[in-house]
Image (cartoon, rainbow over the protein chains, first blue to last red):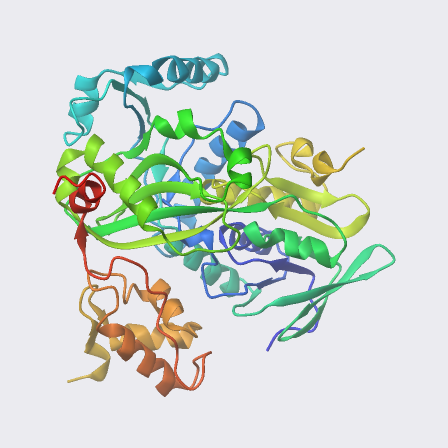
Length: 388
Length: 94
């Protein structure tokens, strides 16, 4: 049974909502977490499982990522189940000479901010990853990058949250948010009404629907991303791999919104603790259609076979897609919303939710418990999207 | 033999006991069971165990979808395909 009253209601049981529920509960609050689907949510458990810092931009973006990877480490120690977080290091593979100027500018930008990505040549790259093609131009190496098991992370967080006294209601749909004189008063669900003064919107790509219930337009769009899963294999790829094309091609999303048939592609490879390879990824804007497409699967397979020729022999067992919550400045929306007392945003992580989940949960918990955050989040406020 | 030890998903070696425990913990759909236990995540993608998991859910009376719990989402490929086969298809160089 769903409680009739709650100190705090969190809408969305993905990695953001689950981390937020955990940090709030640990801080002594009693929350009710609502998830429309089952344990894990949506994109939180359908992604490359990267806990990745290399591509974060200097400034708040990188600050959050660096703080969050320390929390992943901490969670690995304090949660009861193994979340399989490891930090083998990440490599951005430079595929051809043409990419060099972009990658060098990208590296220098980060160097200026004191964030070092080490350039390595083809020989070094191949000594780290023996299956890499000899035709690559080089790579950037970053020892801070890693991967996790998002299922295990969320299950472990949820279990601990329940153990510490909060409640989680899966398969529960939010139907409306009750307001009274500019204040949040309750959440109406298909399982009953919960009276509350504080509601957190952690609905990722569905966050805008929650906004509509209280009359605000939340500019988060579902950005479909497709991945491929292979059979379980002995260790073949030990680092977390991204292709430089991810960086040289990632800048056309606004254009893609207008052209549904277009998709972007950037290589990423992560061999999980279970031995499966997660291969990705393509992205496009197709509303909430998460069927995978043959064209996208083929483009991922081609890129993998080209950069890691021996992986041409491994078997694909599944493809999957989900929606990364896209915002126009590639940053999440965090914090209270002006004019609506008791409504807190924690959504729009643009494909970095798994990495940023823990820091998001910690900061939102601090905000609610103390009114302040240990990392200033003013520039992430909803008001940046409100016309002045 | 103890029923709990019966292997339901042979690809991922998940026993009936593990599935019953997952349902006890809160799994209400075949996908929930898959997420909690890995049943159906292996080489055959639940082709064999999907029905068995569905039956266990039904038997528990706790399944969300009644009377028959739906299978988890089916995605291509239908059978395992080599990365290289997919990569060469479009080029016609098979």
